[in-house]
Image (cartoon, rainbow, N blue to C red; front, top):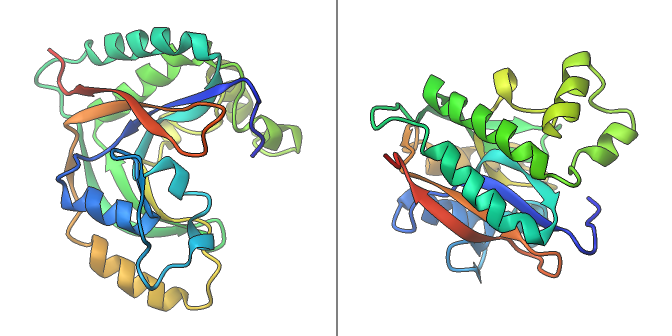
Length: 230
């Protein structure tokens, strides 16, 4: 993925609480604690090159993709995101269920996949739409230029939201390994399934605005809001 020299990146992520066993597990698997901004030793069954793509982001579930923007607009993005979260009532059902291990992209990407409640899907949609005007470049631009994401609905999404993903095809997930390059997928599956099996349902208690300045290699949390705000 190409970085733009003067552009920051921003995203809205669900980052579990620091005290959460799920967060501690995920951070150990990735080798980076985004809350503490600290590199961690990997488990013995994972190699550093298997986490080169995932580790810099820290353990998270994407609500809004990691877009590029002008650094001067980050405060406005923070304000807009907070307003979006404030639109949801105290009774909103912001939950994720059906957690299970999944493998994507020909075995390179391993995730804990969830299903979003209708209210959480609505929150994802609202944030995606309201933050799109702040985007100066998309991480999907190069793939589109290379001929990917050409179905009509993907083209329309790129024009309006700067991402071909999400909305009715939203696949909430926490990345566990990326890019896996080993030769024992069955063994890795057994290990990860045993580790993640207890985490089948999540109550979403907060969302975070995460940022990666152009000069940094890793992401950090710029702002975080409890849910519900009202």
